[in-house]
Image (cartoon, rainbow, N blue to C red; front, side, top):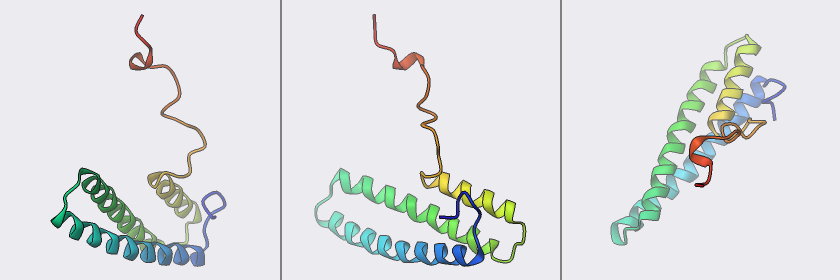
Length: 110
């Protein structure tokens, strides 16, 4: 909600709390998938585990940054960090870049 307008300390704390809740749910899912992989390995589950582990890493990094911002007073810097975090998690883009434009590999053969 506060990506465009800047975040209050309360909003940052709520975001940190929500991320912590989501991390716990995802970590439980990861453990369940790992247990399933022990008895019946699938490539799909392996890919899912990789994606979830990546998410947990990014989420943990974001939470560390949010906790570091708690005492800061520079709202422009905080807003930039929150926007960067939104882009890192797949949000915040207003265009479809980098899909825009023609590239040599996208044209069809003659």
